[in-house]
Image (cartoon, rainbow, N blue to C red; front, top):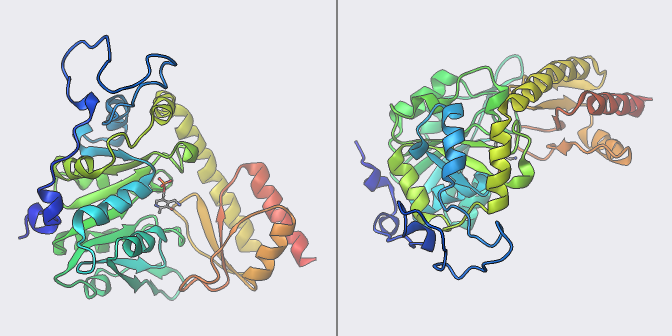
Length: 350
Ligand code: PMP
């Protein structure tokens, strides 16, 4: 069995991290800050933020059901995705494996880091829905595969990957398994974060951007073993999450009940939107959704997309994405927004 050190890039394993001014005085009752060349004026913006976002993690840990030392916070989960490449993948040597179609940033980050990206197409079942197979995925793994990226619920398909198959990947693959649960709040299945204690190579990604209604503050979450989080903290920029974001995150966490209500409302709207899309005469397939969006295949996605644009309604055209010909990805909006969408779609037919 490989150790964590066998998977990490040697330069990262031996890296001595930058020690910031705020790291060095811990445990004292600090009153006068003359250590970081800040201005004494314009509180609280004059001060560097807490490099490890301690307060945010303290409120977040019980909601996520993990210890604080199992949490990394970054500038969106996109920062965590990029860090996986920078920590584990030797440019020009290592590769990562993922599925297709899936979230586009895994491939972009692979390209930026000069790491080979191996997408394994999902299968399609008799009902026309996507199916994920561990065997097909693991066939793409070789001795230089450092990580597998699995998005569940998957973007743009909307569905959770089959849990049994994902478990097979976790038990059989010796590198890092990244389960991107950006849409976790909208699924009925439990989060993979529950399995962190059993799988030290598991990294679960979540975010404030979707159900938590805070895409603008850029706050992503990685949940993993304390050893893996230690590597993230070592490689990240010292002050990667700014003061404004940390303040706003605390407000969101203090009013978590509101998030729960919004999620319930959006799930009800998802059911209503799926029903409307299923009835729509030009629909050929509505994919099941465990997320806050619905993938729908129509007769002519480009024409419908172009028409909706003229009505000021923007959906995501996925027509050119592998296995998604004539598919639109539609975010579940407010009841009024969903009504406006369906009304415009019906007008398109007239
Ligand atoms: N993962 C998935 C699957 C996503 O769809 C997105 C956003 N579209 C992200 C991660 C990035 O989220 P963040 O805003 O936290 O960077």
